[in-house]
Length: 393
Image 1 (tube, rainbow, N blue to C red):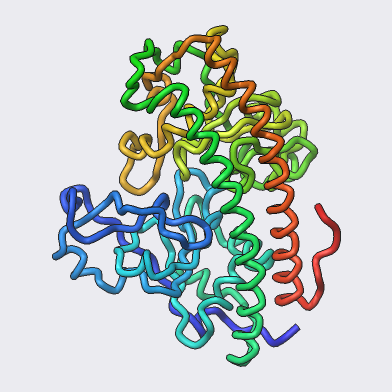
Image 2: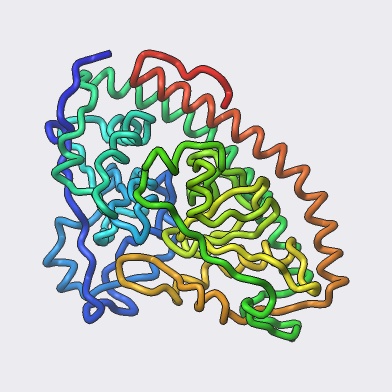
């Protein structure tokens, strides 16, 4: 492998700036928050947060530039810190980055090369090792050791990874399209759950199930509790798998599971910190940490298929109900008191049958995405270590 140099030799590393509530406005200069971009740097749009232009002018150096790599550097739960690494595209440029983001701005390297290294296995492990409490600090990230390659070699590697990433993203877009077909069927059968145009009876979520909050063993990383055979759900598992999730990123020992929140396979779970409102159904028994809630013991008049797609349909609406300016977080009480439509059980059962047919298509799409992702990971591994990744995982 090539010589290593500190990241600060080829990039500027600094924090964003979170405006005070008094400076936040319904319109004005856009503010980039966690929810506004995905892991690939794609802007979700439209911007939901704005500040006074005067405030934005004062902190103009915190504005996002195309080619910046944005790293989640502060979160309600330490497990989220460093979990999102995004390459800012033109549609996110110009917005003021909040303090939730650590910004890496290349000054002497190809921006794509820097981004891919930070997203590589080596970069991800290095970032995790730098987390202090619930933060990453610029001075620590600036000292990360990265490969020293000449500009042409950086561009060559970035071009190869761009092509592989384009294939992976197309596979992911196919999954998103398949998911949208299910949501369209849901809306056709039940109507918008927010406006409830079919005037179904409404019930509070807390009255339709037993809602439980996840928990985590402490201290984080203690080998007595972490690294065992019990799967532990992470938000990145949800964003990877979609509606039906199988945790693969983290795990607990049997003792660690006793200090967490074990829930059985087929449990509906929802993120209440970080990517607030993202819901999925577990495919295996697993533990959830305090960034999730689980929906157990569903009311006999409620099917899991209806609840799952209902929660996914409500995902954009949770943003207005989050507590805290920097840390995106919902309380268990917030979720319990949420009113939702409850259509006739026979109609929910009809929708469940539709979901089973849809799932076979989704499984094929996910397998194609998995293959593209493994190819991408192998290329990244080879590019930054000289050794291809072995095995399918």
